[in-house]
Amino acid sequence: MPRSRPQALLLVDGYNVIGAWFDLQQVRDRGGLEEARRELIEVLTNYSAFQDFETRIVFDAQYRESPAVSEVITKNLSVHYTDAGQTADSYIERLCALFRQDARKFQQRLIVVTSDRAQELTVVGFGAECISSQRLALDIDAASQQVRGKQQARGRSAGRFLAHSLDPAVQQRLAQLRAGIRSPDAESPAES
Image (cartoon, rainbow, N blue to C red):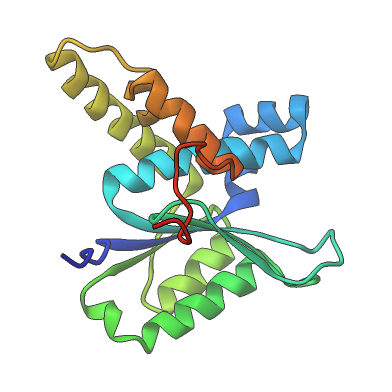
């Protein structure tokens, strides 16, 4: 059975969110920007799966001299680093303009997450919805509370993230998959 289309495409200005969330500011200040990015990716991986959103986190590459890179994290989440000199804002604006021409706009919401007022006005002009970084944090907390409530109703406790409710063996395997480590018992395509 083909996968149904996610109910929304969520475009997240990654550095804007890191700068707006106190927890991520603390992670950035203690462990560096890479650690803050990892934390944001983990939080949005869980949230996107729970909400059935196709999420794209966009990070500026303006401080690096490298070409654009995209990385698929899960079926619901991908991370995009812009070209050198390109901002996340211009990348998101281009995606909003393309989405406006796409037939998906009739079946799927387009939501941009940023607290940049000029960016908000621009993407709304393209027909996207816009929520602030703080509003996203509140939505994530509400989703986490829903999950905890359901788990408590089943007699289970959960941590902050959806992944904490998984069996420890499954958590370990997911960590291996994220790190690109193959399972020793997985057969290669040539063996099947």
